[in-house]
Image (cartoon, rainbow, N blue to C red; front, side, top):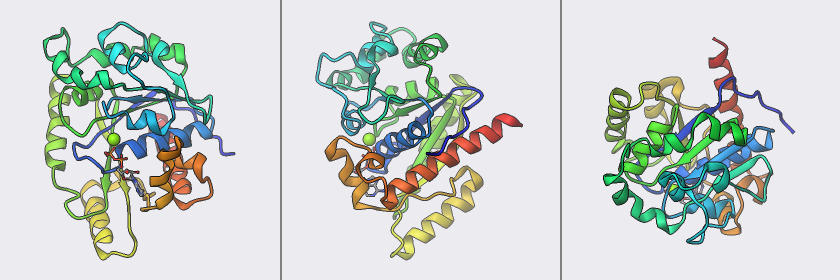
Length: 271
Ligand code: ADP
Ligand code: MG
């Protein structure tokens, strides 16, 4: 079992990309599982009304369950809403219920509408849970929920699919991050890009990989997540791929990516 360095400061990472199906949820839950396996306490915040991260971690998310929705309203603390995954006592999840679907609209008329999640993820609240890492799994849009995630986080992790049109829309995402940096969260950085669903049989995958590396340099993790049937099957069993098939290439790659993330962070903190 690999033990990874604890970050000197808790890391809150928003997993964002307004495109659907690029691997946001898959990356959030599997990176979290990788860190948890390595002994780091990790919390996944499911901020997508679809509740895919909750499903993947097999955490109850029927309507009425204390969820991220109630934490945004300030009715419930994250510690109260956080459920332990079956996989590991180190892996927690604040689920999303269908109630979250209305939040995008309801938030508009609320006070400090962009900072509701930041308030919920206060230092005290997270200290109570004693988590080292928080991953916020965003919905596929740049609306108020994603803005809340960007305001609450220190870092943005962008998953990019190694496919045609992968870079389309990225400019819009980056300019939104820029706006958040200017007006709402100066400390936010795009710290990590993760290439996902790489298919080595296609030339295109290599072209996209090269293009992303040329453009973003070492923000891009060395580890690339391959397209793998095991990765896509795991959520159907309420498991991350690390639990579903720990020996599979998908599981190994997510574990490697988690290690890289943790070791890079530790290095940065040391400077
Ligand atoms: P997003 O959260 O960005 O919408 P998901 O993580 O839900 O994207 O992934 C979209 C679909 O692709 C899901 O069905 C998921 O199981 C599948 N998928 C994600 N990563 C991989 C992978 N590396 N190999 C195969 N299928 C994947
Ligand atoms: Mg998703």
